Image (tube, rainbow over all chains, first blue to last red):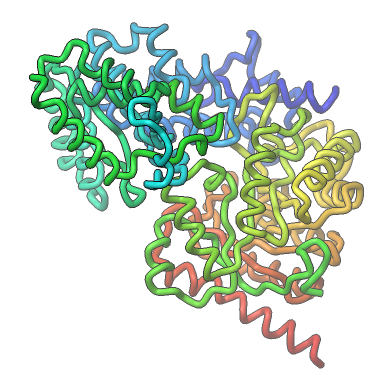
Length: 308
Length: 283
């Protein structure tokens, strides 16, 4: 047996879902007895059978990955409920096992996967997808690339209407159907408050609180920028015109084209547009959202556009 | 024998694993620590807070990189994106050596995120050594491979774990990160004498030593890094430094992480043994 064959066979068993009891399944990958499958590769000792030794790794795999999903998507868990979230996570990880050296990327394919498997979201599809997009944007904003900030001299020599401004790769733009930013902050606050509490009553109260928070959430379109200041991630709601303008800049449109995109369907009076735009740009520049043109690496730019 | 070509000819003392709950304490109090070990994968990112903290730490402390997902023992080729990011981090930290585990964990591009035990075969030793060489050539930094804790052994094994370790490091001409807690855990799980292991590794290849705590279950011991170091592990450590000399030593504490002071105090216990070794060398 080659090393590659042994590793492929053992990995199949390690990555096979656990039974409901959270023990290793009795049936091996591809059918047959798991006891025989384990005994084919693993030596027993005086305390543990081959099955039990392999089971240690099988359980560790699932506990580690499910814990990572819980950590990365607390908002989605609050929406689906703990049990449904765990079942969904197992199905997702079976279809989309980690293909990255880091657990940071474990949830990278969750949004497209959920779109293909809407049954996991039941009657909360729009809400759940909004939350997944927000939680993934949160991760990207936390450790995304920061390019050198735009300086005044970077703008010299370029005519205003033809100017192209680059957004920092870590700045994420989201158009959402629910105010999931409020919900996520509430869920995270609840999780932080629970630190140090061992009481069942407290956890039950917290769970009921989350369920109520989800239930009372009403649909309302919002435009959100997920960004960071001093290395902490913040959510900033903006208007539709601002969103369209920023989105156009991210796509590489020059200023004039971006303004046209922003105000094509706007009801804002013409007289208010100039001062509004001036104020927006001042705010965005203060928040450090613009970076020097041509300083974004290709990988980050592709990633940023995909997330917008 | 503290400085050798496997740890970049350094003579580092006692270090501590750099963990997020301690960032603020370290930067505000600036405790005296000889060096910090970082988990490479936590900093192989594009930007943000982790790299900001790392840069501040690098201004004040020596840092050594320790990886958890190179999987030298996996039959597949190293992931190019992983190597590219790792090399960028090596340039940032200027780590004098770099360590990762003697294990496997990925198959056909799918990652288990675990440190799975090797089958101790000559084929596996040859493939693993080849991969260590490839990674070292790409990263241009000395490599040390770490023995892992294990809970299973394979029928196909043709040698003991320490014979396999020796086979790999000789073929790859690389260093050893000797984890004496892992030796203890595996010795209990597989019923061998841990001192035989410590006495069998080539002392002149030991670049670094790991110490840590673990958790006991009814039928096996799990390497959890969530407890203080127990006396039998300290005795293995004592034996290791008797053989290897005053070697760079690192305490790992990764779960239920206590205050920085508690972790620091636990690490400093290694001084009891290092002092005796230094005295013996002087005499």
